[in-house]
Image 1 (cartoon, rainbow, N blue to C red):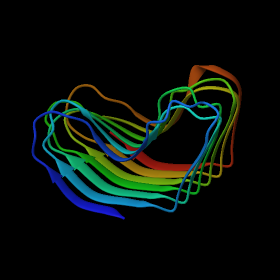
Image 2 (image 1 turned 120 degrees about the horizontal axis):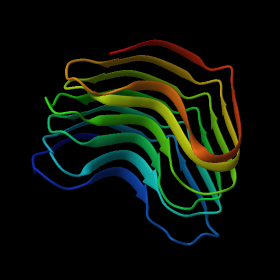
Image 3 (image 1 turned 30 degrees about the vertical axis):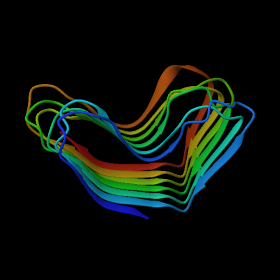
Image 4 (image 1 turned 180 degrees about the vertical axis):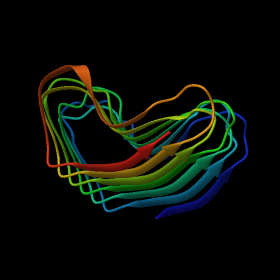
Length: 193
């Protein structure tokens, strides 16, 4: 359990859990963790609940990321894949209560994948109760890369962005660099701005 952390610096990057290994042949399991009650005034830098870099096989299963808030503008990720992992299973996680209260637009991601070719599974995740002011942009799930990508059985609800003249709210967003996207049996509701 990683809990009850208050960050008062105006800059810097936060990771609840980070796998920084660059060894592509590794198999990495990040399972059944809780990252919760993280608050920051950071105006530059990024907040990550769970993040990783390279591995042949990544399993991110049964984690809870809850109540991460920022008063300064910036980007917050519940779960973030940002390097060159090949095969990824991101299943049965709960990401809730990501909050941005700046008057300047921020960005909130439940799950953000931005890696490489391979088999990617994003199944049975629950993503809900995001709130943002100042025209915050929100993504429940944003998947950018892969050979075969399965996005199924996820529930995404109650993503609410208010104020500002910009910002968008996306339940599921698929990028242009995937080969085959299979998106089915997801539930999306109460998305508003």
